[in-house]
Image 1: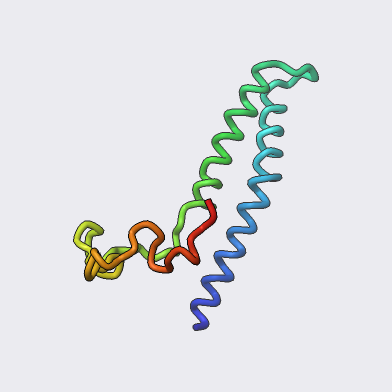
Image 2: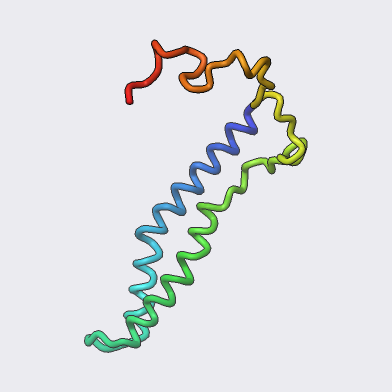
Length: 114
């Protein structure tokens, strides 16, 4: 039980750290790298290109770490869906001649208004 709590706390902390860096840390680092590459005070396409590339390189691993399910167990079905018994879904009708196929099992009184 204590291991589970520690694991959940560690995952929550790592998620918070990555989420904060996803929205603030990575863009600031990308802008800083872009500003150091240009060296001038005028915006250039080279600086924009560097910022976009650095931002993509920083964000991709963070997004993969946030959205990749590390802690979920792998689910395996006990049988393929095409072999599942359909008895739960369908019942063989008894005597089809006695059934009301137009209004259904409740009859004309409870039939929906047309």
